[in-house]
Amino acid sequence: MPEYIVPRVEIIEVDTTPSTPAGVSLSIIGVVGTFEKGPVNKIATIGGFDKLVEIFGGYDKDLTGYKSILAAMAQGANDFKVVRIGGESIKEASLKLKDDANADVVEVKALTPGTWGNTVKVAVVAGSIEETFKLIVISGTKTEEFDNLTLNTVNSISSKYITAAKVEAATTIPKVIAATLLSGGNNGATTQDTDYVGSIVAGKRTGLKLLETIRVAIVLCAQQSSLTINNALITHAANMVVAYGLRIPILNAPKGTNVDDAVALMTSIDSKRGVFAYPWNELSDIPGDYIASDGFYAGRLATLNSNKSPSNKPINGIISQDVDLFDTDIKALTLAKISPIALEPNRGFRIKNGVSISSDPSWNQTNIRRVFDEIEMEVYDATQWVKSEDNTSENRDAVATQIDLILENKKIQGRIYDYKPTVCDDTNNTPETIAARILNTRVRVRPIFAADYVDHSVERYIGN
Image 1 (cartoon, rainbow, N blue to C red):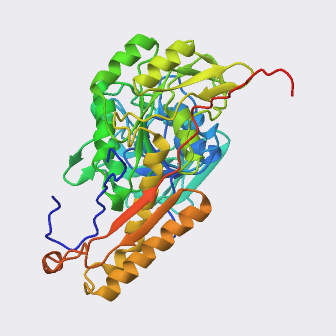
Image 2: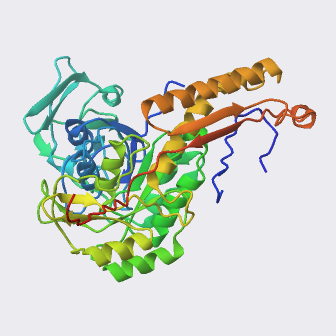
């Protein structure tokens, strides 16, 4: 039962089938992964390939985030909320600047951790004003100059590549040095499951926990396949409330997992939220490296309307897979609630079913889950105005009308098949519920089902 303590809007999902405001984007993909550069455990918005490389760098076989995002971009996805994580070894490249007595006086660090910082050079020359110095920063073909610095102002420079700070107890400015490389930068590629799952310590969130604070529609821990992380993704999605965004997690099997072992993995996995993607694929942009299906699948979902099943939709950029799948394999995987990508003769690589990881027939189709997520979030957003307002028949009528307008729009768009008028009257708002400060609605939606099974009857006849 919900707790009625503070004012709030609650979505209660009820299945009424025999077994049971401005719109919401379902195209945002939340990604937790390792990268060669970029801020750590902060959310960055990525809208295209150039921005991805600018903020987080490019391909490294030992790093995960770039691979999943690149696979998603190959499907047309272009809206990502990215959290960079790293193992214990993650570190900024650095250089200690010394004075004429060879004492450390200024510490220069790469702007973000990673081996990229090991390519940055720093030089020191005399400043234009006496008793100051000039810092010259070189990264590739780009150069920055910061003149007339003192120990008290060096920390205020605004560089795209470095930070600088006075060493405690330093009293003299650094001596002149030629361009010198920073060193010691580390990508933190060797991670633990806990780095991806994240934590909340003293109010500071890391990893997957950080994505709880923003709306995303699809979420993945890039290239990860452990039971711990798969369960964490399921728990993450299952515990999200409407205000912070309902979402679909994409799970992976370990690289090289055969069909029988993939099926066995699903014996302990069951949730109304989630897709188990399979197998690992070779992407044309990074040949020779088999990568998980999470990015491919997430990218395709992100480009589909909520009511569209991912089944039979093409997947771009795959040139080979680490497991060859045949019809009997696809049937076994489907029965096990796994949604594989497989090669079809003359049609390329395609998603072979639209199943989620739910054993509940009401929610085992991914598109049904997504369209209800969309409706529930739009209803939540649109009805915020009535929270703590008078629980009168006029306001209840207004809420019902507002919800019906959302549903009518969905019907016109072809996102739902039909709906029944929203009930928000004396039948479900009794004196007792009103006295308890509760306003109830009953929203009934008939979704659109995919024509997954097409049976043609071809008959032979003789004569007229």
